[in-house]
Structures are given as structure tokens and as C-alpha cells.
Image (tube, rainbow, N blue to C red; front, top):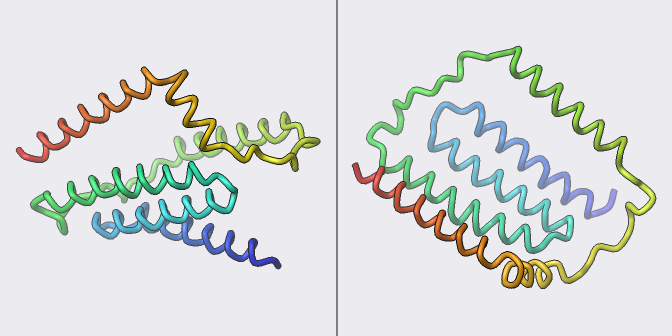
Length: 162
């Protein structure tokens, strides 16, 4: 087994175990910190896949932004330890339907995939081409997205202040 495979399995195990703890733990602070390790594991898998830009965006947006806001929200609440989370009820029918739809979609994607160009070289300048698209073709959408995120941040801060 190559070193690359060992590192991949390590990141996959970190991601899966920490995601399992996010779902199963009853303490919301432990769930938030487990989510941190989940995001880091996903970023590590992106690095192994050669998607450097997506890995950096994963770290900056999810770890640096969303998770920190989640932790601040948890820390600003009055009752951290006595938060009532409904984990006792398990709805079997919607879960089975959702899993069946997911497996069906994955099988359809595997059947329709053309495997003859699977080992083709990926373009090296992914960051450069994404940057050009954001500045040239999608500049207005990019600016509007920034304004929407600013409005959401102001709304979250005003809700937390009450």
C-alpha cells in the first residue's frame, strides 16, 4: 500500500469518525468541535485530489467563517449543557427513502460515466481560470453574493444581541 493511500484512508477515517460524533453527541460544544475535524478532513481529501483552490476555500469559508460563527453562537447561549436536542426519534421511512434515492442517483451516475478519459490530466491552472471567471464573467454575481453574506452576518449579530 502506497503512502498516498495511507494518507487518504487517514483523512477519510478522520472525516467519518468526526461526522459520526457530530450526529450522535448530545453536547453541542462537542458537536461543534467534531464538525471542525470533519471540515479539516474534507479539506485534506481535497488536497490529495489536487484541488488546491477548493481545499483553501473549504478552510477559509467553513472552518474560518461558518464554524467560528457557530461556536460564537453556542458560547453566547445561556444554557450550553442543558440544550434539548431531539435525537431519540428516528424516522425510518424518510431515511430509507433518502438513502434509496441517493444510491439510485449514484448508480445512475456510475452507469452514465464515460470511463475512457478517466485518467486524463487535469488542468493545472485551476485557480487562475476560476479567478478570471470571477473577475470577468461573474463579477456582478460575486459582488451580490458578498452583499448577501454581509446582510446575513448583520442579521445574525442582531439576533445574537437580543
